[in-house]
Image (tube, rainbow, N blue to C red; front, side, top):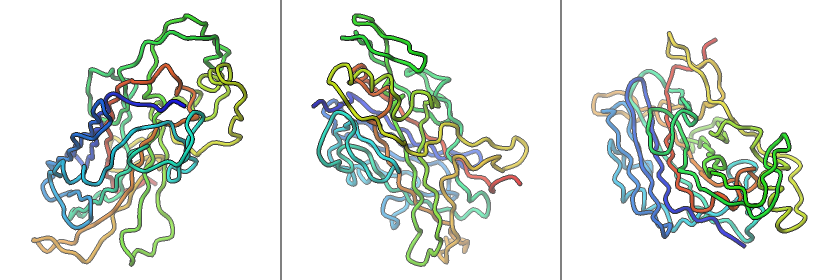
Length: 312
Protein backbone atom coordinates (compact mmCIF):
# COMPACT_ATOMS: atom_id res chain seq x y z
CA UNK A 1 0.00 0.00 0.00
CA UNK A 2 1.27 3.45 -0.83
CA UNK A 3 1.43 6.27 1.67
CA UNK A 4 1.40 9.82 0.45
CA UNK A 5 4.54 11.74 1.27
CA UNK A 6 4.62 15.48 0.62
CA UNK A 7 8.01 16.96 -0.14
CA UNK A 8 7.16 20.30 1.40
CA UNK A 9 4.12 21.78 3.08
CA UNK A 10 3.93 25.43 3.94
CA UNK A 11 1.13 26.35 6.28
CA UNK A 12 0.25 29.99 6.85
CA UNK A 13 -2.35 31.03 9.37
CA UNK A 14 -3.66 34.54 9.07
CA UNK A 15 -5.99 35.96 11.68
CA UNK A 16 -7.56 39.31 10.88
CA UNK A 17 -9.33 41.54 13.36
CA UNK A 18 -10.43 44.80 11.74
CA UNK A 19 -7.29 45.88 9.86
CA UNK A 20 -4.63 43.76 11.56
CA UNK A 21 -3.33 40.28 10.86
CA UNK A 22 -1.57 37.31 12.43
CA UNK A 23 0.67 34.90 10.55
CA UNK A 24 1.99 31.39 11.12
CA UNK A 25 4.09 29.12 8.96
CA UNK A 26 4.36 25.34 9.05
CA UNK A 27 7.07 23.64 7.03
CA UNK A 28 7.68 19.93 6.65
CA UNK A 29 11.06 18.88 5.30
CA UNK A 30 11.66 16.19 2.71
CA UNK A 31 11.75 13.66 5.57
CA UNK A 32 8.34 14.88 6.75
CA UNK A 33 9.73 16.19 10.03
CA UNK A 34 8.48 19.60 11.15
CA UNK A 35 11.45 21.96 11.08
CA UNK A 36 9.75 25.31 11.51
CA UNK A 37 6.36 26.58 12.61
CA UNK A 38 5.96 30.20 13.63
CA UNK A 39 3.01 32.30 14.70
CA UNK A 40 3.52 36.05 14.73
CA UNK A 41 1.14 38.86 15.56
CA UNK A 42 1.24 42.59 15.26
CA UNK A 43 -2.08 43.07 17.00
CA UNK A 44 -0.82 44.81 20.14
CA UNK A 45 -3.08 43.77 23.01
CA UNK A 46 -6.11 43.30 20.74
CA UNK A 47 -5.49 39.61 20.18
CA UNK A 48 -3.01 37.19 21.70
CA UNK A 49 -2.43 33.53 20.88
CA UNK A 50 -1.54 30.56 23.04
CA UNK A 51 -0.94 26.84 22.63
CA UNK A 52 -1.54 25.86 26.26
CA UNK A 53 -4.03 28.54 27.37
CA UNK A 54 -1.55 29.83 29.94
CA UNK A 55 1.29 31.45 28.06
CA UNK A 56 0.11 34.03 25.54
CA UNK A 57 2.23 35.67 22.90
CA UNK A 58 2.13 38.38 20.31
CA UNK A 59 4.84 36.40 18.52
CA UNK A 60 4.47 32.70 19.26
CA UNK A 61 7.91 31.01 19.22
CA UNK A 62 8.39 28.22 16.72
CA UNK A 63 9.62 25.78 19.36
CA UNK A 64 6.41 26.18 21.38
CA UNK A 65 4.30 24.84 18.50
CA UNK A 66 6.77 22.23 17.29
CA UNK A 67 6.92 20.74 20.79
CA UNK A 68 3.23 19.89 20.42
CA UNK A 69 3.68 18.07 17.10
CA UNK A 70 5.12 14.62 16.55
CA UNK A 71 6.63 13.18 13.40
CA UNK A 72 4.08 13.85 10.66
CA UNK A 73 3.94 11.50 7.67
CA UNK A 74 0.78 12.53 5.88
CA UNK A 75 -1.30 9.66 4.49
CA UNK A 76 -4.61 9.54 2.71
CA UNK A 77 -7.26 9.39 5.43
CA UNK A 78 -10.96 10.14 5.59
CA UNK A 79 -13.43 11.61 8.06
CA UNK A 80 -17.15 12.20 8.21
CA UNK A 81 -16.92 14.82 10.96
CA UNK A 82 -13.38 16.22 10.83
CA UNK A 83 -12.75 14.79 14.31
CA UNK A 84 -12.44 11.02 13.93
CA UNK A 85 -10.34 9.57 11.13
CA UNK A 86 -9.69 6.33 9.33
CA UNK A 87 -7.65 5.48 6.27
CA UNK A 88 -9.16 5.85 2.80
CA UNK A 89 -8.94 3.57 -0.20
CA UNK A 90 -5.21 2.83 -0.15
CA UNK A 91 -3.81 2.49 3.38
CA UNK A 92 -4.87 0.33 6.36
CA UNK A 93 -4.23 0.62 10.10
CA UNK A 94 -4.91 3.21 12.81
CA UNK A 95 -4.72 6.94 12.09
CA UNK A 96 -2.46 8.83 14.48
CA UNK A 97 -2.83 12.53 15.21
CA UNK A 98 0.16 14.64 14.20
CA UNK A 99 1.63 11.77 12.27
CA UNK A 100 -1.00 11.11 9.60
CA UNK A 101 -2.62 14.55 9.82
CA UNK A 102 -2.01 17.92 11.44
CA UNK A 103 -4.00 18.79 14.56
CA UNK A 104 -3.34 21.98 16.53
CA UNK A 105 -5.27 23.66 19.35
CA UNK A 106 -5.19 27.46 19.47
CA UNK A 107 -6.41 29.63 22.32
CA UNK A 108 -7.32 33.24 21.63
CA UNK A 109 -7.94 36.20 23.90
CA UNK A 110 -8.66 39.86 23.35
CA UNK A 111 -9.57 42.80 25.53
CA UNK A 112 -11.35 44.49 22.65
CA UNK A 113 -14.99 45.37 23.30
CA UNK A 114 -15.89 44.72 19.66
CA UNK A 115 -15.83 42.00 17.04
CA UNK A 116 -16.09 38.75 18.98
CA UNK A 117 -17.60 36.57 16.23
CA UNK A 118 -14.78 34.95 14.24
CA UNK A 119 -15.10 33.70 10.65
CA UNK A 120 -12.84 31.98 8.14
CA UNK A 121 -12.84 34.53 5.34
CA UNK A 122 -11.78 35.59 1.85
CA UNK A 123 -10.93 32.44 -0.12
CA UNK A 124 -8.55 33.47 -2.92
CA UNK A 125 -7.39 29.96 -3.85
CA UNK A 126 -8.55 30.39 -7.44
CA UNK A 127 -6.86 33.77 -7.86
CA UNK A 128 -3.21 32.86 -7.30
CA UNK A 129 -0.59 30.33 -8.32
CA UNK A 130 1.97 28.51 -6.19
CA UNK A 131 4.66 31.16 -6.70
CA UNK A 132 2.36 34.04 -5.78
CA UNK A 133 0.95 35.29 -2.52
CA UNK A 134 -2.06 37.37 -1.64
CA UNK A 135 -4.05 38.45 1.38
CA UNK A 136 -6.83 36.01 2.16
CA UNK A 137 -7.41 32.30 2.62
CA UNK A 138 -5.91 29.82 0.18
CA UNK A 139 -4.66 26.28 -0.29
CA UNK A 140 -2.52 26.00 -3.42
CA UNK A 141 0.07 23.54 -4.67
CA UNK A 142 2.84 23.55 -7.25
CA UNK A 143 1.26 20.71 -9.21
CA UNK A 144 2.74 17.49 -10.57
CA UNK A 145 3.14 16.41 -14.17
CA UNK A 146 1.99 12.82 -14.52
CA UNK A 147 1.75 10.26 -17.31
CA UNK A 148 -1.32 8.08 -16.89
CA UNK A 149 -0.63 4.36 -16.80
CA UNK A 150 -4.19 3.39 -17.81
CA UNK A 151 -7.50 4.69 -19.19
CA UNK A 152 -9.96 6.03 -16.59
CA UNK A 153 -12.94 8.36 -16.28
CA UNK A 154 -11.66 11.64 -14.90
CA UNK A 155 -14.69 13.91 -14.57
CA UNK A 156 -18.47 14.14 -14.08
CA UNK A 157 -19.18 14.45 -17.81
CA UNK A 158 -17.39 11.20 -18.64
CA UNK A 159 -14.15 12.96 -19.52
CA UNK A 160 -11.55 10.25 -20.12
CA UNK A 161 -7.82 10.27 -19.41
CA UNK A 162 -6.08 7.85 -21.77
CA UNK A 163 -3.03 5.74 -21.01
CA UNK A 164 0.01 7.83 -21.93
CA UNK A 165 -1.78 11.18 -21.52
CA UNK A 166 0.32 13.78 -19.73
CA UNK A 167 -1.39 16.24 -17.38
CA UNK A 168 -0.71 18.44 -14.39
CA UNK A 169 -2.52 17.59 -11.18
CA UNK A 170 -2.80 19.36 -7.81
CA UNK A 171 -2.92 17.86 -4.35
CA UNK A 172 -4.39 21.10 -3.00
CA UNK A 173 -7.71 20.01 -4.51
CA UNK A 174 -7.85 17.05 -2.08
CA UNK A 175 -7.06 18.82 1.20
CA UNK A 176 -9.67 19.38 3.90
CA UNK A 177 -9.61 21.69 6.88
CA UNK A 178 -11.86 21.20 9.90
CA UNK A 179 -12.19 23.85 12.61
CA UNK A 180 -13.91 22.85 15.83
CA UNK A 181 -14.80 25.33 18.55
CA UNK A 182 -14.05 23.97 22.03
CA UNK A 183 -15.56 24.77 25.45
CA UNK A 184 -13.66 27.63 27.03
CA UNK A 185 -13.44 25.93 30.44
CA UNK A 186 -15.52 23.83 32.86
CA UNK A 187 -17.78 26.80 33.53
CA UNK A 188 -18.65 27.09 29.84
CA UNK A 189 -22.18 25.64 29.83
CA UNK A 190 -22.96 26.25 26.19
CA UNK A 191 -24.54 23.27 24.47
CA UNK A 192 -23.72 24.20 20.86
CA UNK A 193 -20.30 24.80 19.37
CA UNK A 194 -19.24 25.56 15.83
CA UNK A 195 -17.82 22.61 13.88
CA UNK A 196 -17.05 23.03 10.17
CA UNK A 197 -15.28 21.15 7.38
CA UNK A 198 -13.97 23.25 4.49
CA UNK A 199 -12.94 22.28 0.97
CA UNK A 200 -11.23 25.44 -0.23
CA UNK A 201 -10.97 24.17 -3.81
CA UNK A 202 -14.61 25.24 -4.03
CA UNK A 203 -15.27 22.40 -6.47
CA UNK A 204 -18.08 20.23 -5.10
CA UNK A 205 -18.23 18.21 -8.34
CA UNK A 206 -14.77 16.83 -7.55
CA UNK A 207 -15.40 16.35 -3.83
CA UNK A 208 -16.02 13.33 -1.62
CA UNK A 209 -16.94 9.88 -2.94
CA UNK A 210 -17.42 10.66 -6.63
CA UNK A 211 -17.58 7.69 -9.04
CA UNK A 212 -14.86 9.17 -11.26
CA UNK A 213 -11.36 10.54 -10.87
CA UNK A 214 -9.46 8.69 -8.14
CA UNK A 215 -12.26 6.18 -7.60
CA UNK A 216 -12.42 5.06 -11.22
CA UNK A 217 -8.62 5.06 -11.45
CA UNK A 218 -8.26 2.67 -8.52
CA UNK A 219 -11.18 0.50 -9.67
CA UNK A 220 -9.36 0.05 -13.00
CA UNK A 221 -6.02 -0.50 -11.27
CA UNK A 222 -6.94 -2.76 -8.36
CA UNK A 223 -10.46 -4.05 -8.80
CA UNK A 224 -13.71 -3.54 -6.91
CA UNK A 225 -13.99 -0.87 -4.17
CA UNK A 226 -17.25 0.04 -2.45
CA UNK A 227 -18.10 3.73 -2.88
CA UNK A 228 -19.34 5.49 0.30
CA UNK A 229 -23.09 6.02 0.26
CA UNK A 230 -22.96 9.33 2.16
CA UNK A 231 -20.34 11.99 2.66
CA UNK A 232 -19.47 14.64 5.24
CA UNK A 233 -21.20 17.99 5.43
CA UNK A 234 -18.62 20.16 3.66
CA UNK A 235 -18.50 23.91 3.07
CA UNK A 236 -17.26 25.05 -0.34
CA UNK A 237 -18.07 28.77 -0.15
CA UNK A 238 -16.95 31.03 2.70
CA UNK A 239 -19.08 33.74 4.27
CA UNK A 240 -19.63 37.11 2.65
CA UNK A 241 -19.44 40.35 4.63
CA UNK A 242 -21.17 43.71 4.52
CA UNK A 243 -19.13 46.36 2.73
CA UNK A 244 -20.57 49.13 4.85
CA UNK A 245 -20.69 47.65 8.37
CA UNK A 246 -18.74 45.09 10.46
CA UNK A 247 -21.24 42.24 10.01
CA UNK A 248 -21.38 38.92 8.18
CA UNK A 249 -24.09 38.26 5.58
CA UNK A 250 -24.24 34.53 6.34
CA UNK A 251 -22.86 32.02 8.85
CA UNK A 252 -21.23 29.62 6.37
CA UNK A 253 -17.77 30.00 7.85
CA UNK A 254 -18.43 31.19 11.40
CA UNK A 255 -15.99 29.22 13.55
CA UNK A 256 -15.76 30.82 16.99
CA UNK A 257 -17.41 33.11 19.53
CA UNK A 258 -15.09 34.84 22.00
CA UNK A 259 -16.55 34.72 25.52
CA UNK A 260 -16.17 37.37 28.25
CA UNK A 261 -14.17 36.14 31.25
CA UNK A 262 -13.36 37.49 34.72
CA UNK A 263 -9.71 37.84 33.76
CA UNK A 264 -8.47 41.41 33.41
CA UNK A 265 -5.57 42.86 31.48
CA UNK A 266 -3.22 45.44 32.99
CA UNK A 267 -5.67 48.19 32.05
CA UNK A 268 -8.52 46.56 33.98
CA UNK A 269 -10.36 45.42 30.84
CA UNK A 270 -11.99 42.00 30.67
CA UNK A 271 -10.51 39.40 28.37
CA UNK A 272 -12.74 37.68 25.83
CA UNK A 273 -11.48 34.18 25.10
CA UNK A 274 -12.01 31.22 22.79
CA UNK A 275 -10.41 28.00 21.71
CA UNK A 276 -10.45 25.97 18.48
CA UNK A 277 -8.96 22.74 17.19
CA UNK A 278 -7.81 22.84 13.57
CA UNK A 279 -7.39 19.51 11.74
CA UNK A 280 -5.82 19.39 8.27
CA UNK A 281 -5.79 16.18 6.23
CA UNK A 282 -5.72 14.63 2.78
CA UNK A 283 -9.21 13.31 2.03
CA UNK A 284 -8.76 9.74 0.81
CA UNK A 285 -12.15 9.70 -0.93
CA UNK A 286 -11.57 12.92 -2.87
CA UNK A 287 -11.76 12.62 -6.65
CA UNK A 288 -8.32 14.23 -6.99
CA UNK A 289 -6.30 12.10 -4.56
CA UNK A 290 -4.61 9.55 -6.80
CA UNK A 291 -1.06 8.67 -7.90
CA UNK A 292 -0.70 11.82 -10.00
CA UNK A 293 -0.31 14.10 -6.98
CA UNK A 294 2.24 12.13 -4.91
CA UNK A 295 5.10 14.47 -3.93
CA UNK A 296 3.32 17.73 -4.74
CA UNK A 297 4.19 20.85 -2.70
CA UNK A 298 1.52 22.82 -0.90
CA UNK A 299 1.09 26.29 0.58
CA UNK A 300 -1.79 27.14 2.90
CA UNK A 301 -2.92 30.44 4.33
CA UNK A 302 -6.00 31.11 6.42
CA UNK A 303 -7.55 34.47 7.14
CA UNK A 304 -9.95 34.78 10.04
CA UNK A 305 -12.10 37.87 10.27
CA UNK A 306 -13.74 39.04 13.49
CA UNK A 307 -17.01 40.98 13.18
CA UNK A 308 -19.90 42.01 15.39
CA UNK A 309 -22.05 39.13 14.18
CA UNK A 310 -24.66 38.28 11.56
CA UNK A 311 -26.41 41.15 9.81
CA UNK A 312 -30.15 40.85 10.44
